[in-house]
Length: 467
Ligand code: ADP
Ligand code: G6P
Image (cartoon, rainbow, N blue to C red; front, side):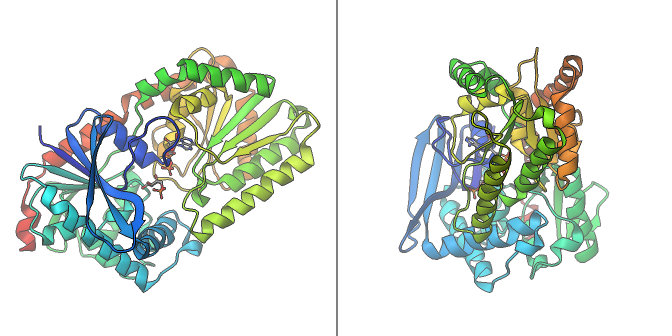
């Protein structure tokens, strides 16, 4: 078996104790690397006055990590800048929030070069290199310049947007060309893969060759859809652990057995939380009989706090939860409970299990692992109902959820009402089909499908055509 080198901006080996930063990428990669002898390379999350290229090697929970510190300017131009003020909003269809700034571009290229130069000496001839997410699109291109001939794959955790949208990005062609330095580029869904192909065919004179490769910029590229999953077995076990049971008991006592609706998301404008809050408000106003019978728990740990758009969504959600409680709360009942902290994995599993309904309603989301975790954590004899946005990648697999348009508070309210009154037999039938999918297309299946596809590409093609 080849050694696997994983590269991502964020490197976290979850302790499970709820201390580390959250996000689907870190959760999935930690699970994916568990049985692999490999290396995980990325940013330490810390900054230094001047970049020094020092690597911090650590072995945590069976995974070797190598991290580097970045400079303040890197943080503002690369991480907060090009990654999170340009690519993230654009790829989530928020052109209104997308900022273009030449210094972001430069910072993005610089950090990718720094990653390449520091990583280069760690790469051995037979290693498979697997690079993750929008922060690091140009990394293979930089590694090729340094003479790396290994097979290099890229997986995009977020959506690939429609052809017309990507052309609004200055120098969009350079970004796409950089992807042709990889041997394999993977997307979460066939829809994103097709959007990418459409761009290449229309904007870069690309062609699809007889053996299914995409050819453009003088190079061949294999693309594919590889829907990411969770460690379903482990998560289901966590949900019946003593700690999860304790959390469940505490929740049950505190909610006085009211029907609990739950949302769990990083505090991000792409998660559709405002419309969700409005949907819940609508439920209360349309169904007076449900007041006092339900409560909505939204867990939303803070994320990317230096970016203005995140500060703004936070202020809006604070105001909205306050307004709904102000209008509907009673001396012994608060309809909305809104918390911004992190939880341990087993506590989170207990929370999911105590909920009758999960609201997973992003306006756009590459996949959304919370939807899958909720399913895995349910009691098979009395499962809760998943309400899921049609614009989450997960909707491509989880057909038996109640699928909604996340922009419509009315639709969310209707789905909530339907979920809360769904007969047990229907809940069980839907849940079985969902759990079957979550279990089958789990994180190991995702990793193996990608790594096998990468190993099967013809190594060296790119290095040769770049020479
Ligand atoms: P994203 O990657 O955009 O954050 P996902 O839904 O794919 O969205 O992944 C989020 C991950 O973060 C999930 O594994 C979820 O359990 C975890 N998470 C979210 N909120 C919390 C929290 N408050 N405490 C602990 N883990 C959390
Ligand atoms: C999403 C992205 C990841 C990112 C995570 C958390 O899952 O796809 O690349 O790591 O959000 O965001 P952060 O900015 O804290 O790393």
